[in-house]
Length: 252
Ligand SMILES: C[S@@+](CC[C@H](N)C(=O)[O-])C[C@H]1O[C@@H](n2cnc3c(N)ncnc32)[C@H](O)[C@@H]1O
Image (cartoon, rainbow, N blue to C red; front, side):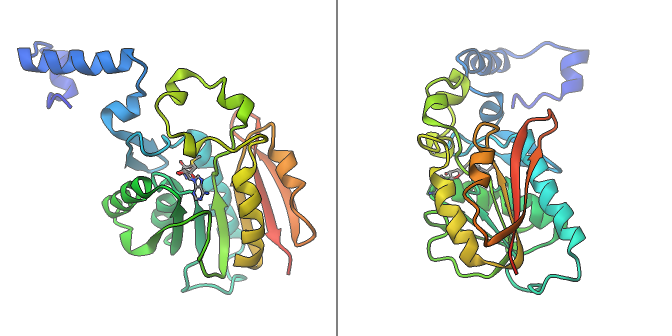
């Protein structure tokens, strides 16, 4: 951001007055609690480096595991899916585009990615273009998947899932900077999920995958929302051993 390579800072740490002032301003922002990713405007996600602003949630490392669950399923079901060539994956609540862009660039699938936030979608589109996958992802402004026409092989989502009680206890760094619309899942954290599940039932092909990131407090409650239209309902742990992901297959 100062236009000074890291090596120069180490070898000859003198800064011009302007650079020193710029650095002090950046440090002041950090001291005020602004997340580093918003200050530098970038966040890593799998093999990507995404642009981030306070319009979007900063992609979390846990979500990389959600992407891996989808990739593993995609590999395991190769040859048995009947949707090749169509838009195959639906990402609900795409935010920065992290999940959709990772799947497009790593697997080469076609996606539809939705969000209720227009500024988030604008940034996601920029991120897709920067990653060279703009032609693989259609971004749609809508509530969950209203107006989206299937069928899809996968519906993946990291929806807002923080409960109302947890919202009031979030660290200031999250509560004061990240978009509440990306976090607040209502009383039990499952408000948006309650819209996703029936939509997934309609939009997924038989044998298709529903893959969700949730909170360890509500992931099993979410699993209980899946009726007999679903099989292979599984809860998965994140890298720290917390139950954070739910996958299920649309019954044939
Ligand atoms: C937890 S963030 C996830 C962002 C991104 N997918 C990720 O994993 O980093 C949830 C996203 O869902 C979006 N969202 C919230 N309510 C929504 C709704 N009713 N319909 C569509 N998107 C919604 C938010 O704007 C936000 O971008």
